[in-house]
Length: 218
Image (tube, rainbow, N blue to C red; front, top):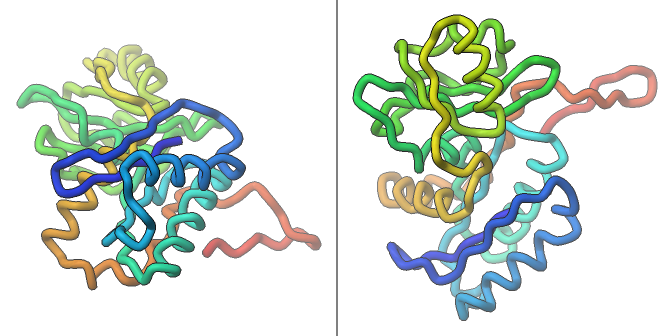
C-alpha cells in the first residue's frame, strides 16, 4: 500500500508499506494521513494517479475505485499507470540488457512486459506461462523486477539464459507512479486524462455468477 503527494519535483509526503490484506479498510486513512503530512487539502490537488494493473482483482478495484471517487469529487484528471511500468521505472541496466517487469500470476503463469534501459516498452503487457516467457522477451540478457522476478530468473537460468534480479521494490511505489504521471501530464495535458482509466485485466475472473455466467469487468 502506497500513497504520495508531490509538487513538481518536490516530494511533500510519501508512504510505502508491504502488506497482503486490509487495503480496503486502510487505504482512505493512509491517503488522509499523507495529505495531512504534506499540509495539503483535497481542494489543493490538481491531478491524481493510480495503478491500473495487472494484479489482483480486489486490489486493483480498491485502488481504482478510490482514485475515481476522488477525481470525480474534485473534477480532477486521473492518470492510469500500469503496475509493470511502475516497478520497471526505477530499474537500471546495462546497454545489452532488457528489463523484465514480472508479477506472479499463480498457476505457473506470470504477468510480463519488457522494457529497454530507457524504460520504453519493448512489448505489450501479457500473461504467459513461465515455460513460454523466454519466447516473449527480446534480447539475451535480462534484469527482472516484480513479485515474479525470482520465478522468471530461475526458469530462464534453467534454459541457460542470463537473468539477474533488480535491486528495486517488487511492488509499485506511489512516488514512482506520481513521477510517471507528471511526465504524461506534461506531454499530453490534463484534458487528456479527464476520462477515468479502466483496469488492465489480463485474466478472466475466477468468480461465477449464479447460473455459471461470467461477471462483466468494468
